[in-house]
Amino acid sequence: METIGNFLTQPNKDFPLDCDTLDMLQAGTALVAALGNIAGDKLILTGCELTNNDTQRAAGYVFVKTRDYPHGEVLRWEGGNISGGMYVKLEDVSVNAQGYEYPKAYTRRTLAAGVGSENFKWTDFKKPKTSAELEKLIADLSKQQSDAAANSVSEPLGIVKMWAGVKVPENYALCDGAMLKTSEYPELYKALGTAFNAGVNYNGTRYTTQSGFFRLPDLRGRFIVGYNDLDDEYKKYGNTGGEKKHALTINEMPSHTHPQNLWQEDSGKWKGGGNNSSPRSTSYHDRTVQFGNTNATGGGAQHENRPPYYTLAYIMKVR
Image (cartoon, rainbow, N blue to C red; front, side, top):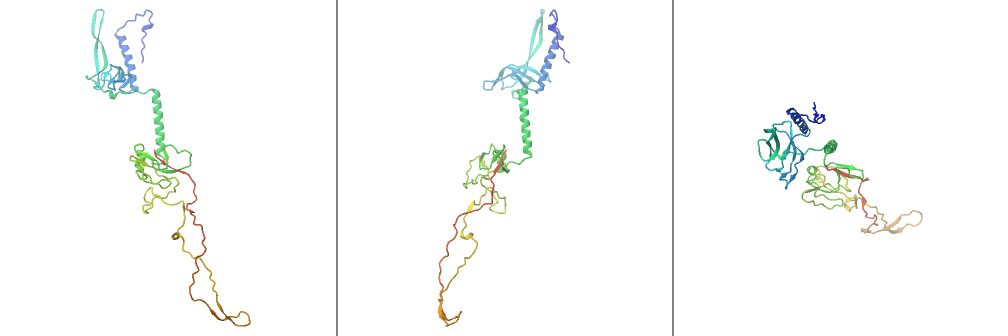
């Protein structure tokens, strides 16, 4: 229920100011003060700015729930030092009316620096956010929740994926051996550790990594082989091997032979007359003869050592 005073609408402007009127005004003030509950307790409404190297606060108004007003009231902060806290200060205000003195006509309630029967600490007070600030905060929180929900059903940190896009997506990084700061990627560091800190780059040069940093794997120009703890070459993350092209050595060639044709010249005497006569006697050498080397063949060039390939990017989830 709302009660509105029509004091100024009276024709003669002489509406009497009695106790009932004052009580109604006081009730209206309390109703307005109760609106502070919308934002909570211990709120800085206006003023109270920090001064003198944050050791004092300027005068202002706060909303606070007190023993006498458990639903909250608006109190004026007088200003002053904040290191010793503040208390509810009560002052009696006298009024002289028609020759009569009212020593406690009013009680002035303020907050003052120091200690009293009811005390508060400035560290508990805060400024309420405006509607615009709250809307932005809600929007930011909604986005964070959406991102968190998307991440919760997606890949864990450190997973490597193929990527065909021109730009690496948000929260991912190219697997190019980049050095990341441990303090900026603590969760990813928990997943990777220092496994790739001494790895090799795309051309075989070994990395060195600064203290406080860790590296992503450098998968540029690389095929991936599965981890195998039973094979020395495949049981450590970051191991590399293989060649793009290779020239065979003699030991790598299959065992083989090259055929040779040998013509031996004989001499002898032939029987006279007829065709296809056989010699009466022949002569030949009975020693081994060295014939030399066969003609060289082949160019000694390196051969292609890779399967058919198609280039895409390896990316890793880093956030």
